[in-house]
Amino acid sequence: MALAAERFVYSETPSFDEEINSAMPRKYLWLLVIVLLIVSWQWLRTNFTEHERQARTQVRDSVAAAFPEMASEAQERFAIRRLSSPAANGREVLLLHGLDDPGQVWMNLAPVLAANGHGVLQLDYPNDQSVAESARFLAQQLEELGTEGVSRVELVAHSMGGLVSRELLTSPGLACEAPVCVRPQVSRLIMVGTPNHGSDLARFRALGEVREQVSRLFGGEAGWLDWIFDGAGEAGLDLLPGSAFLRELNARPQPEGVRMLVIAGEIGKEQWDALDALLQQHTGELPQALREARQHLGDGLVSVDSARLPGAPLVRVPGNHLSIIRNVSVESTRMPPAIPIILQQLGDGEEAPGQQTGN
Image (cartoon, rainbow, N blue to C red; front, side, top):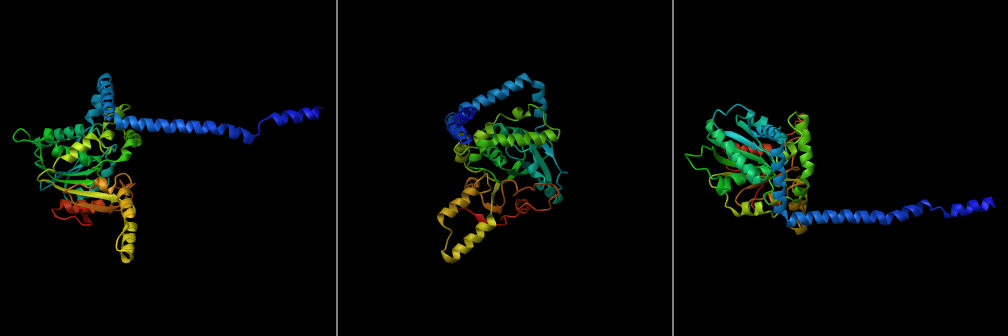
């Protein structure tokens, strides 16, 4: 009887497979809930962008009002900094980083510029605020630079820095009129990996914010509220394809008297070129589907089509969004491919080396 009872109890105990199978519907339910939350969040962001922008700005202003001393300390870190001696010929190069970048993107370019006789300046700005706010900040900093005797600058901008520069140069509200305005003349703008038509990956800018603040923290430059004092994510909304900011910016004519160049990164460029050459030998051209895939891939964050700007020559270089302009470590001796092009352009050459295209 004891044996029979044991068999009865054992037969009523759920097997491991039965437990797994009974848990599967719950897992699928949670997966469905997560997917619905993500879709709902993206729908809200798409349809209520301006409401989100206003809410973010109100949060930033409220935090700054609650912690005025910390906000003031954070703002003091934003300015134009000189990285080299002034140029003997008076030509200064101002570097503008992009979204969620602490300025490390210039680790290779800045010393090369200085070694070639350029005066090198770097703008540190609250890069998470709206692009329009950053452009106004840039205008103010340039006017201060003008009072120091600088009469002309050439801008080299990475990623969103190119949009900040274009906003400065084309916004009617930022027009510079002498003799009241003493802002240096901008004679050139070189954009490296700039999303002139936006990037869908701007939706995931929180990851970049974490990277930036960690970098600043280990560099002894960050306070615990700096993640909100440098903006509340309004820039990420501006960078979305089709945003109100980009529609207005791209509807304006290009600035007069400013020589412009776009440098776009392309992952696997050598392989794409080899495939293109091989196919042209047999079929005459790269198939449309492959051409579209090549354009869309771009540097991994910004597609070639997004970087393209009417009226500005475009040069494609191999690499991703960062490797085209900087190395991973300071020990690396590799020359990022955008740097020789930038040097050539700043040396008064009319044409940039590499692939020029208007397509």
